[in-house]
Amino acid sequence: MKIFLILVAVLFAILQLEAGENNRSDANLSSKTRLEQQHIKEQMEREKKYAKEQKFYEGKEYNLSEHKVDAKELDDVPTIEPDYDFDITDVYRDDQ
Image (cartoon, rainbow, N blue to C red; front, side):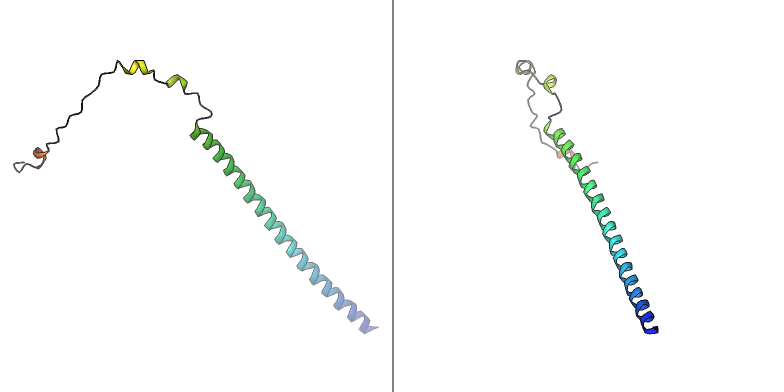
């Protein structure tokens, strides 16, 4: 009878150890799952931000027709001739 009780106690201890290991692995899995869900959520937020920025860069959300310049108005703007005077000898004068 003592052997039977010892055997049951050992079996019970083994089952307890197995249950503890399963609980730890479940906790690790749930922690891993939560972490994966958090990463997925963060990535989805980045994708939304990227989509919004793309709309801005492509100009899909904006009506810029009021800022267009009429080609007829450009004819009235005087042409400014460039000044090709590149004489910079006064910068390197020794008497300064």
